[in-house]
Length: 144
Length: 332
Ligand code: SF4
Ligand code: SF4
Ligand code: FES
Image: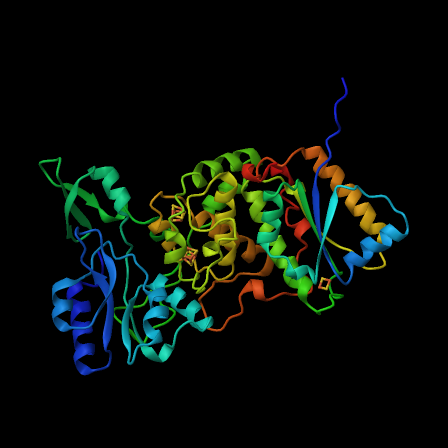
């Protein structure tokens, strides 16, 4: 019997100025990363509010990763410093509610780091795959 | 026993009203029963004399009411504040939510307020009358011949057992002596949860949050929740006003509610007090407070007017989100 390989659905929020360009570079260099990573471009990592992360899970994501410029390099000077605090608290809260830690991540990826982008996505997808489907934060009505 | 009596507060209110210092008084109004005490605005001496109450059920924090009441009000309003309430008062001032000039704040001492659900657990249903005598309350019920005697200290609100401060951080005038900031054990329960396995934590929260009726009382009472338009009233939010449709919505609502006040929540305990389902909401708020203290340094919202809340602040050396679990791997 052939078992269909489980592929996690991953949502990656990428800031326009660094990480999205990093993803572009990964593509230009023909670096492989899982096709199940869906990128959502945001103007800055701090555009992402906690609702976005939860909403992604609601709509069926198994893992959510947020990528932005390296601290100090944010196009808007300090956006990613706020992101860092917000996400630290949110992830800690999700963990407190018993949601698996590996389902969320923040990574800083610059426009020159195409290789890092691909490596990060491969690693993250693998970790999430090992956790299996997101059951604890799913909304049954959003299931097709 | 409360160190301050109803008579003292009534006299104070009436004299300030009659002197013209204030034009209205925030107070606790008698409800149908001795324990259902409602926040109310009094404007006449007669009304105050007849309906103003002060007893062990005056937990309600008036700070948030000032936002709506002062807006188009001409003159000052008198507000009585317990020490915990003064933190909310300051936090609202920090956020420019009301005009300090329009308020006359009188700090009152407090020895803790009672939780009616704990009283009912002991005395049973059908509570018809509660008389206070010093530290004791005599609870008359429909089903028992003799009144049940209960010590106030045995039925306090959760927040009062873990009172963080008897010191008033804001007032124009103080009745009685001021107390001290206390060393409370308010993070103990949070630490216990943190020490559980993720499966246990998930089961715990699933059990608690699935009781939620989405009455929104916790949001409505919260002095940190003062947005005029709330995300939970937005029909596109997926968690607008209605019973949560499934376990995701329950969690979404509670995570977002607690997150929106993270760094601004003074731990006043009103949300847990009003929850008709007795959901320990303070355990969510205190998790944020505990994390903030640990990651970004001790911070007590409302302690000082004008202090910058941790989530609208940063340092270049802040902990990375992926590192927040370091050192706690054993509970992964
Ligand atoms: S979240 Fe609860 S404890 Fe915190 S300020 Fe609001 S009502 Fe008070
Ligand atoms: S007060 Fe309690 S039941 Fe009502 S919405 Fe808040 S948590 Fe749910
Ligand atoms: S612009 Fe990239 S993180 Fe702000």
